Image (cartoon, rainbow, N blue to C red; front, side):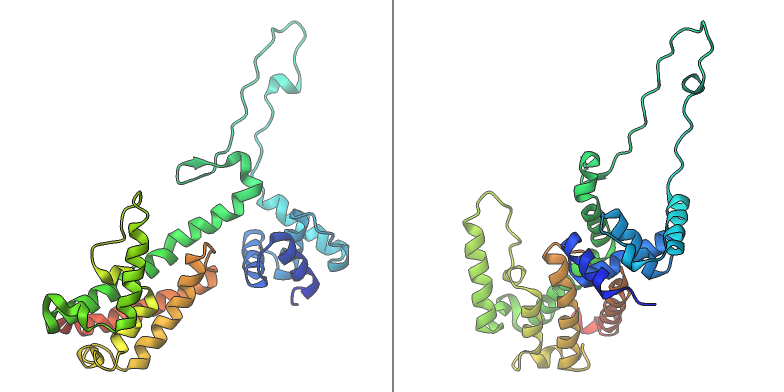
Length: 268
């Protein structure tokens, strides 16, 4: 049974995210509570104080309550002195409650958990695997380009790069110089262009013959970069990549690395 589209829309408005991210949150709730997705969606709506009576029957509500109770951490029993204090006994001091802490980047956000708790979970997920894969892919492209073209053209290899790409790198470098308080991206011009620009360099008509021994086809490179760039845009604009897309990203990175490994002699 699919999740009611009206409930999806209500969750999307309440969470202020797209339906795609709502579906990810529902899948996580379903996994956490061991519930079908339609009941997990209702559970998420209950948590966000969205009326759910039209989306679930009483038996479904009871299943959700039982699942949430089973998933909730056990609370410690109150001290015996608080349950029953014998007459004539002295006053005992109550032990302070244990405070759960939640930290991201060494910042404790326990008191604001309802505000940014979900965002912190997204940040941990993005940092856990998506970002390293994107970082390694993009920067390994820079290494490949630099090594192949420097082997062909020497230290002035950047002069062979398409003019539009060189102009963009220079604009980015000039813009960065005005922000004197910040460390520069790097010393090489190739550090100042984006992922799609790297693809443009490799498949350029004049430069492709130097990369052809490494890759099967131009469109193999451009299609792979295009797929990576979709994920990169999501992460770069401060959104978490849905967990379901990580295996695809991992597989694409593995394909890239296997291709490079097979042509390692050409890279140098």
